[in-house]
Length: 492
Image (cartoon, rainbow, N blue to C red):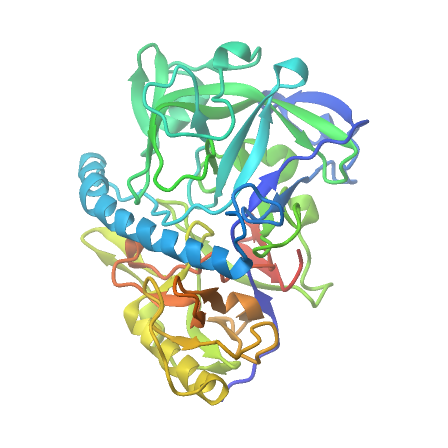
């Protein structure tokens, strides 16, 4: 039996919004000449000359959210989300075996990410004043390119806000082959040569989603960490999508790519000002608006050496796809290690491709494990919960096969066992209490409690993925310069 310190990991579906004060100060700098000296005068800059940009985040089904169906409780929302995840998973398999495989054979590299369920988005602003246009972008730590739909749209998916109009933007400028940022994209799988006179891009995803169009530069508006200053940063590279499809979209405009392995991502474009780091804390269903946060910049990275509430473990950044791999060697239930063979978490080569491992990313709602790994978790969780909820185990929706009838159970107080991850350095990350199980009502009205983990035979790249639901309420920092994942429980 192995005892661990109590520490928790959580996250979920989230909307990130930039909030601007009425009397904030506005300044402008260019990514072409960013340096520590250029930002020393900004409010929020510390003695090192760096700043951090913080964006408030909200669950897509926060209290009062327009996305929440009428008279739909939190348990009703959970059921709808699981059903949507099931649909997305089915489409992802079809997309992976058809469109994605075709693209993979064309490019010779399996770069494509699989996003079973996009669950959170950020509102960003291009330009300022009367010229400002807002776009709502899915936050994706597994891909590097920021792109959104633009007019004239040849084939576009529905979105809630107006489609971005480059002709209305005084700072937008399309790039051509030979421009520095264009050539950076052309040197990745996202490059598509010339799109007419402009620099082209194509971005494919494992669920069949797709974006293509032209690469551009523009000015974007941010806030400093303390909220006292607006920061207009010029010449940020992004892409305009003119021919796009998005499976299971919720009205957003495109994708905010955060993978820092590639220098085309916005974090890497701002590295001189912000350092290579970002963090987030995703709030739970039914939380208040702006209950979570997203931060770009190394200035706010916590130090576990001086604050024992934080823990850290090393990650490995994949050299090809930019994924963050964790050195997970076991799982735990009730803070007791399960004895999963470590080789089941190993990264291996198959047909020249890297598969397996444990990838941290918030693009998938339900934590998905290799079926061999999941068998250990299911056995231990059932053994721990049967004395609490009884021996009658039922099947839930999707691939949830460890559920109990919760008719007479108070899901707010029932003492269900904690579950978590064990790393190679013996650090332990525990999922938050409400992040370890789903509590929802079936369509027949039966209340159920289900283990919030599934065994899926064909996960993206054969990897184990911690879902966004399992990460609720835990602060997660990616310190890329030092290859550290830093976390703290209940930090939203």
